[in-house]
Amino acid sequence: MSSQSFVRSYGFNGSSCGYCASEEATSHKFGISADTLLCQDYQALIDRGWRRSGTYIYKPFLHDSCCPQYTIRLDAMKFQPSKSQRKLINRFNRYVEGTYVPPKSTNEEDNDEPPENQPCTTKTKKSNQQVGKEYDLIESIHEAENKENYKHNFKIVLEPSSFSHEKYQVYRKYQIEIHKDDEDELTENGFRRFLVKSPLKSESTNIEGYKYGSFHQCYYLDDKLIAVAVLDILPKCISSVYFFYDPKFAFLGLGTYSALREIVMTKEYYNVELKELHWYYMGFYIHTCPKMKYKGQYKPSDLLDPETYEWHPIERCRSLLDKYKYVSFDNPPDKVNDNKGKEKSDDKNVNLSSRILDPKNVTYDEVENIKVSINETVVQFKSVAPYLANSSGIIEHLKQYYTAVGPELAKKMVLIF
Image 1 (spheres, helix red, strand yellow):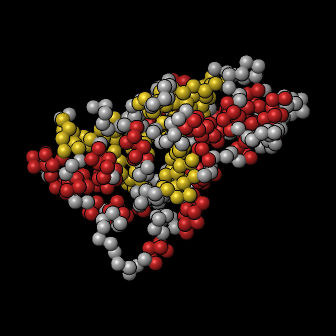
Image 2: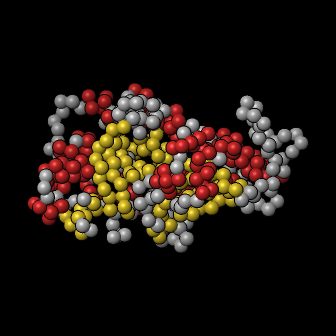
Image 3: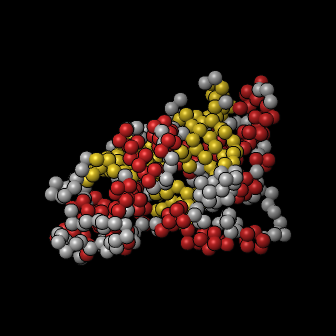
């Protein structure tokens, strides 16, 4: 069974929005859960706008939601850090080295220069000035790791997704102090469901020592866990699931630092001849939400068209999102209006948007070959349909599932009845 993905479909649902604080059901999505999910199948899902939370995987329906969530990705091999990003890495390295002392209060201005009584070391000066050579992001991000002569010992450990009380305690601190969550609602079981459990199974790549699957990238300072990045490593990308840290170290800019480190990790996977893996996915970009809009600062980034599933440079998308809350970048309203009155093609594949968004356009012939599991036996739906009560209701649900996951995955993954 491990050679196939096994999923359960929950259909469409609406809920309140966590981004605009709407109390009404203004956020709409299609949900499935996975008992087992092949990494290549999840790659295909996120390239159709899906995202996972534990074993639950959901696809927002942007047209009907108050805060449309567009999938965003970065080409790590073309990324060049900005001046402020280089400055942040340098400050982090100097803190570990012992030549940077953070401000005593959040109101104290940090000019990122070492205090007078702690002058730069030769190594730090070279790092600051990058004299005579191009800035090396990979070298800089690893500069402070495992140095015996530094004030602090800093190390990174990449391990399969797993639970520990140490991780849970850092998560609690982060959620309470940064997100103002209620302490009583932060349970071990909730943490396990959200950030430990994953349907992705570890899969070998063609490079020894490199695997696909769900991982925790753990940050240790002086042998104490200070941060955890929850990551999915897939055939074409590294996908950031979540990041949490000990708020005591917020002065290090760990949110930005972790993104830069994950970009470096993506580069390193590409550099060991995993040539398809050069994308870094940061989840969703929400143009109307400042907390999610920052992701566009990492360049060059693309947004996924919610109707055609083609990628578009974010610079082009921004002007459209300034005008429209929801938009297909391939078919913006101006273009659609220009095409009104023109003869429509009879080819079903041309009218992609209506076919994707409306299950009514899916025929029985298209769903009859969906693989289903009944009593742990995998068969095609057409072989069991005559024996099912309320088969018309089931067929309608299958049409919705078909439109959400797409034709290829609908026939490849196994739907558990």
